[in-house]
Image 1: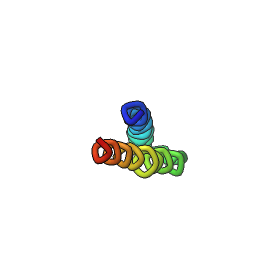
Image 2: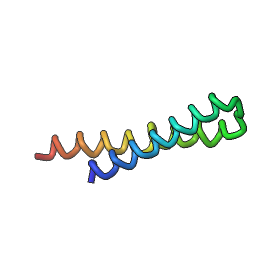
Image 3: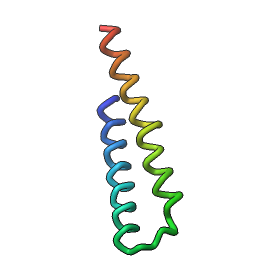
Image 4: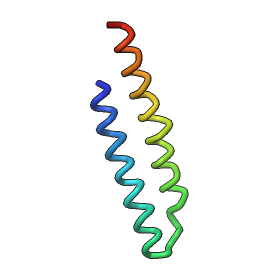
Length: 61
């Protein structure tokens, strides 16, 4: 289960990075809120949940 959330987090992080790089290259910052929320979703949502799951699984064994 934790590996699936890690894979999802990596995909969203990649999408956020590509969006940020594309905005920087084109100098069109209309999608900055979308970029910020995608990266925030990865770091706070899926990333911390995955770490919590891994910690709880290791202590339960």
